[in-house]
Image (cartoon, rainbow, N blue to C red; front, side, top):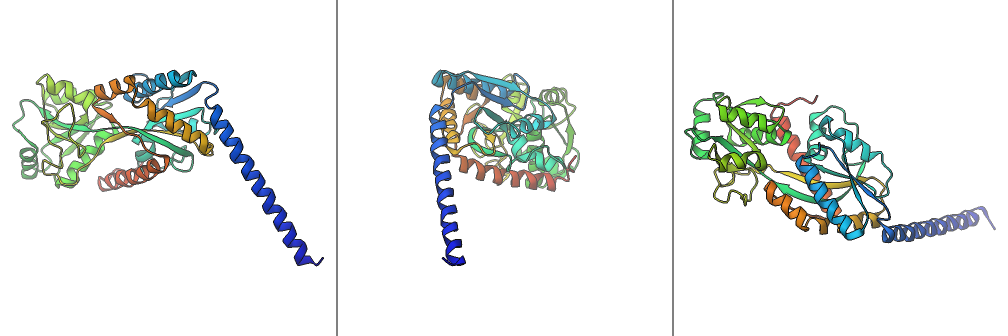
Length: 331
């Protein structure tokens, strides 16, 4: 037997061995998925107890426990714009028992807002499914002279820099910046630690407008203290069906909502990801989740892992463009 024949035979043996190993891994992954979950699942939440993300995680966990008879533990790791929680899940065992229940903050905005992240939002995770989407509402004081978006923008164009908008979250801030960019107006930004604090100043007349989450803004609108002029996504809010979207109101192309999604550590077996996708998809239809979505003014939104990956890429690009155009420098 010559040297070339020996090398060919050796190559065939290596290929056969690799095929056997791959088949074994597939079979092992499938068997693991059939037994999953065999113990408690931990939902890691990047925000404090009581936050919208926390409320959704608890509603989903309740449904999964009912379906699987396994407990779901909620682990709130708040702080650093979600980086603490994201880093913890990125470093967790890739077995499907550590799940990041998160938002666009950790997986679309942070990479543009911080020079250095402690995690990679793409390489360190496997997308599981989208969970929900929501929009924000453009509000002014009920005593303001602006009856619609057109009147507000006409004044802003006539008096550059005269109006101010408040924000207490990255979603609220970017929504205001996008309005400025698409409408071509100069409005002063006033930062707050939270949206409720900004609402307080809006009610007091210290700022002129803001684009805030519906759970913060809608109660004030229904109480007659604020006037809703427009909704931030391209679909009207069920809570405010008579309020046009900003796109309908003349700010063409405007679409800036927020979203919830689930991720697991990179390397998690595909059959486990598929099973978790199935469990979370069913959980978004549960009574507890429906109650959350109704109260938060948002809606269930589920995807395949691949669909979530593509959506995340598009959202990351969109947030990056808005942040760059606004001249916001990474911290």
